[in-house]
Image (tube, rainbow, N blue to C red; front, side, top):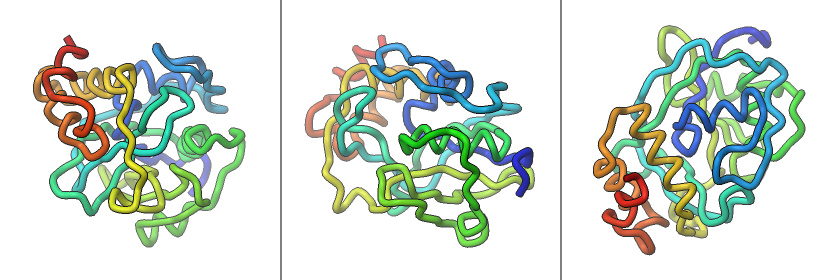
Length: 206
């Protein structure tokens, strides 16, 4: 693939919310976050976007330097469906978004042929350094990234209120869900359900 070939970046965490994802493209600091993003070499907005669901689910684990508390990871082996949002980006933009998620410098264009051909590619041991091909849409690959392990061995950790609010707003914006439906989805995920009740999350989302 050339740097200008299009791929779908599939977001299942805070990047569900378009305003938050724009910080990865154009640079900036998301509301409630503690990290300022450099942005992509090509800062143009996504060429298209649409709501999708993926087989599996999300869980919350580790500790976020941006939000504090646990962050969302995708596990295709979990039961159910994971709500997500697909953004049509150039390959270069996808690589730059991925670099920022991996806390690497923007500017490298790793070879993604293994993920494109076989569905899975590990670029490193870090939290978001495993690339997963979750399907195709309109003839273009759909890619996301997650932890190299699933929910089972993960160090589960509850998310913070600002992070849950960002995810909930993204679910409502992308999928048109009510606050109650978004709260039910988030409050029943591994890592969140030990601390957060559905009514508490629903109150966060107003």
